Figure 1 (cartoon, rainbow over the protein chains, first blue to last red):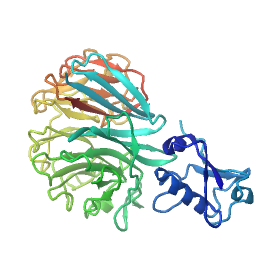
Figure 2 (cartoon, helix red, strand yellow):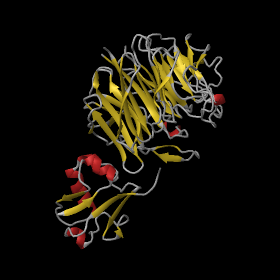
Figure 3 (cartoon, rainbow over the protein chains, first blue to last red):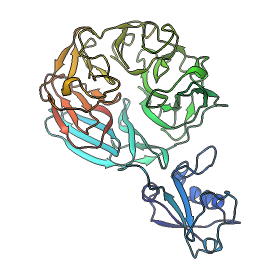
Figure 4 (cartoon, rainbow over the protein chains, first blue to last red):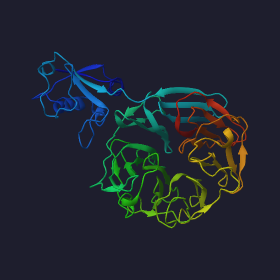
Length: 98
Length: 371
């Protein structure tokens, strides 16, 4: 069970709690977590990653275990505490704008 | 008794204002999707309960929301806008080739006859269509593939397709406008397109007869006379009597012919409304006086409409999609400002009153006349 924390706008869009729990098959990576998240909440498609390129949107960041994982490759394994559910994978909207 | 529903898109959410046919007291609901930019929301002419909304933001991109109950509840529908084929390039501000990139939906235009069919005008400029109530979107690539496409350039607000006009007499004919490429028309339901910019004159364009390159801000049409089009260009108010084949200027005695919106009276095809703005470097009304100008002669002769509008120290703008009319017997006219006011006139513009005062900056105003 993977714990994912969503920012307020996406939580509202998905009509979900701040933290959602999802099952991920196979290796736990950014890609596999986001694939599972979007499978459960299809309305999130295109909001975290570009529909076509699958690249992270510029003002979205991925944090976990007190690390910024935003620039990791999508298939790099996430830290063990995320894979075991001890720590959440955090989708964060950048602090910007007005 | 009949009623009116005013759909307001703002920088920070959508608002829905409702009134009975007297249009004296208004209820406001919202913000819907607070914090998101709502470039446009509008209703289906074929089913007034069916609404579509373009919801976007710098963080999480584009969403499309649909309501089947007049805006009481909303459901996210499809938000995948993928250009057909290899997108290619258009010109960037510095004249270099720039890849076509989807940014947002500026304008949604539901079919006149089918609630499930809706067009989307997007930035970078292209026209998409959904035939399943917004669940899936396909580009009509004939427009972007026009031979002039690689020479299109963005206006200051981006290269947006912001105006979509369906001909009520001819389902195959659609007119669109793109900043800053100009007007295009299809007569075969979107397969092929022709530029419709003959007669437009724009300072700063080296070749005044170039087939594209004009910063068209908005176009309006009266459904009883679809061959007559009224245009607010960057500078100049223009008119075409042949569905865009040629244009002539009708700015006449306006204090400034710069502006963004243009609208036509619901029952008088020669009564036209514009909101003059001082200049393209000062996006506010001349002399700090917010005035709607009305022509009852199809252009050239204009009268200022000021009763109820601020006539001093007013420095708001009215954006291209932020003016609309209702179709009650005494035509109602509505517009929203970048200062967050929505003004309404229940007497065709003779007098005005704010029906909302302190909203976020208004991006769009649409009106539904309800039975």
